[in-house]
Length: 178
Image (cartoon, rainbow, N blue to C red; front, side):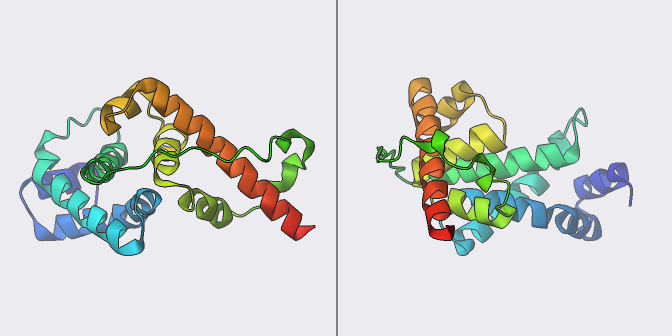
């Protein structure tokens, strides 16, 4: 089914078109939700809430960008709204591994995507949210600050701390694998 027909069908609330849209994007969007959620059940809730918003607002899709980009943005915003409803704790970082530059820079190249996503998911919430929004979704620090209700400097700080956290975790993995 062509994307244009799919959108038109969803606007008309055609169940087959809605199912098709869900099938096309649910897998990718679940990955997005998992990056923000604390567990799979929370991610599934985000996914369901996101698709409800998509179906309720599909008529507002301006068809200026990609449908997938629009769907992704709704999923991210749904996750952010969930984050806002919880009290996110922005934490400090343990700086006992400042020597990252001296380690094998190729260690990340040897890691699978799942390994890297696993490390990201183990980050403290504040780090994870800012890292996902900035490094993966492409939000600016101003957009992140506005979305999360924090200062722009806090977004930058949390991103720097997230990178440092990942570096420390990679160093630990490298030492284990030696």
